[in-house]
Amino acid sequence: MTQAKAYCVEHSKTITLDEAHELYFAQPPGDRKRFKFQCGDSLCRAQARPTVIAALYDRLTPAEGGETKYRSPYFQRHRDHEHVVGCTWREQGESEGPADSVPEYKP
Ligand SMILES: [Zn+2]
Image (cartoon, rainbow, N blue to C red; front, side, top):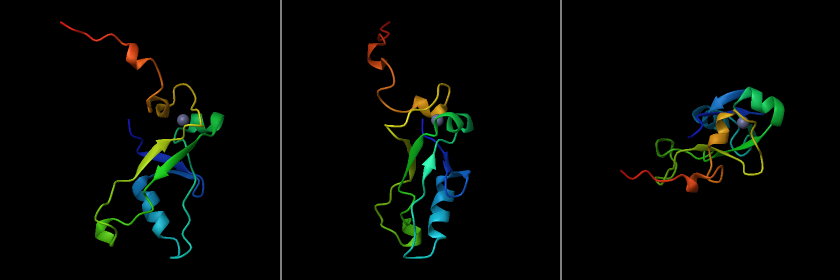
């Protein structure tokens, strides 16, 4: 499950990747800084403050003059930052459970 929003530390609010993109390019050219992001779940953030990764939002889209090989930005959990039980970010990732051991159903 892809996360649509995350908490931006610099702006003290939960924002989308589109908003991150806009805010990034709203900074003065030559002095643009990537933002820090934490889990978008307020309960999780209050307890664990997990850092999350926001990727590719600092690239221009082809319409804005960026590369044609444009890839959509995305949020991703950080492997070293655990989320609290019940946080939707916990469902992401590969090694979160014995998915391999689930028996296949064969009629
Ligand atoms: Zn979380």
